[in-house]
Image 1 (tube, rainbow, N blue to C red):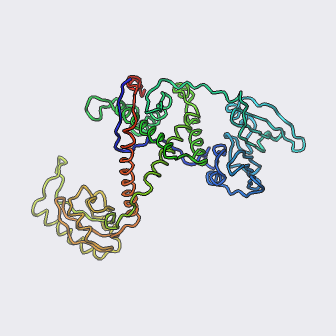
Image 2 (cartoon, rainbow, N blue to C red; image 1 turned 90 degrees about the vertical axis):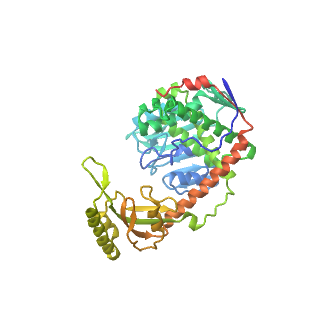
Length: 465
């Protein structure tokens, strides 16, 4: 291993991960097991349902769902006859018995026992694993699911034995935190998937910077640095007394489950992936974001309008050059210039009279883009500063005189001299950058107190193939 000593990281760069939004099984369905342990309010929000408190700790949506939540945290859910848009381990009301059994056997294995309910003409299967207990009722004749009841199990001491914790080789130590192969690969594989989706699988051997290093080596360096940052932030959370609440923990479980179910059996075995590992990874990322929010909560959020002001303009361009037979831009003759300038003058007269400047521009401009939204110092880069300066002198609804630049002649129409939505977005961006800068300074101080050791040989040996 190679000792790197104390690190100094200037910016916060949390790893880009495909964090899934609401946990949906398929369009129109909600997987309710993801929110066992979450609060009633979070359960309602994430499953798009309104619950009424029927009695102490018991909440219902008539004919659909019954939820038991001691102390306000969901511990069990029962799906009733009208709950067709909700699922438990992918099983929905009305699903064929054969399809449901296949899903449940994959999760629980064979049922523990069966009970016949003659009064309701149904049969109930009882499933259980170390974490959860499930009762599924089927109509005897139609062989379709009629009810599901899901509980958080209370395992015995023998059932709480530690599972196989094969984590692979130790990749890094950050202070007292250890990063093993399987955790590092969660991040690396997520990054790999994102880049290959955008650029293809051949990107990894490309020498982007022409320095003899492949893009794959560059990305691995970035990923390990980001893991180091994350571990330091998570460790500091303890010192700051920042913890995840029950809803945030439920989100981490939900994201982890969705991620795990999207993995191939080959990847699960090859990279030692477990639901517990993924839950920890997502929990760490949510916690790191919470630390960021807490540390930067008092940032100055005042941004004057003139600093962020964004305007929207449309323009007509008549070029002062022409394209020759070889495809190159060459100067116009004096006679050609005169013809084009007269065209611009005619267009200016029309522009001052028309109620649809965009249509006039669309029919006559020689530019690829007609409309721009920008602020001071961020005008169209394809034109000189004269374009931006002229645009900022206009009020809403005004048309400029002919503006001459090295590109030709422009006529600019001001759609709005204060684009409120764009200005608000720029203000938010400015405030966010202030927060990033503030956190970077704080993190720089934190990082000096952590010794980092990386298993360089093992990390470099990892291939993207």
